[in-house]
Image (tube, rainbow, N blue to C red; front, top):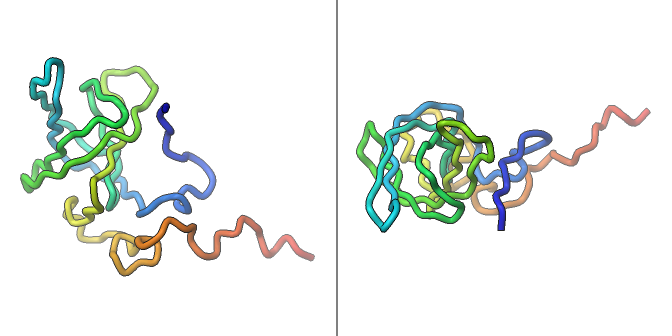
Amino acid sequence: MGSVPPPTNGDSNAQRRSQRVVIKVSVLILAEGAENKPVSEETRTVTVNAHGAMILLGLKVSIGQWLTLRNSRTGEEVACRVVYVSPHESEKRQVGVDFMEPCPRFWRISFPPPDWTSRSPEAKSNTSRPGNTGTNSRQKK
């Protein structure tokens, strides 16, 4: 299986489990390197949501690999799995990570989007949001 990049156009939120927030959060990534030796890297997020994050990472990782992500400000740790690795070659690549379970409080954001709560209908299913039918009612004359 290959990597599937995050949607970049159209109604990408219809496929999301929770809304992304563009915010830089300092994190420490802990992983197993060559010969199962522990490796780590201090980095930051690009975007976060209740289910994971997009981070900048210089470490070589692969899709499906398990990592531990530590919030540098709080010291809290969460297990996550690599779900996306940017194909663009550079010093640091964008890497998408998915938490084992939703953890919206991990980011300590005081203004989370409404769909980050368990009371949100979108949090309970993967259906698209109501009202996103793809048609424009003003087109009819």
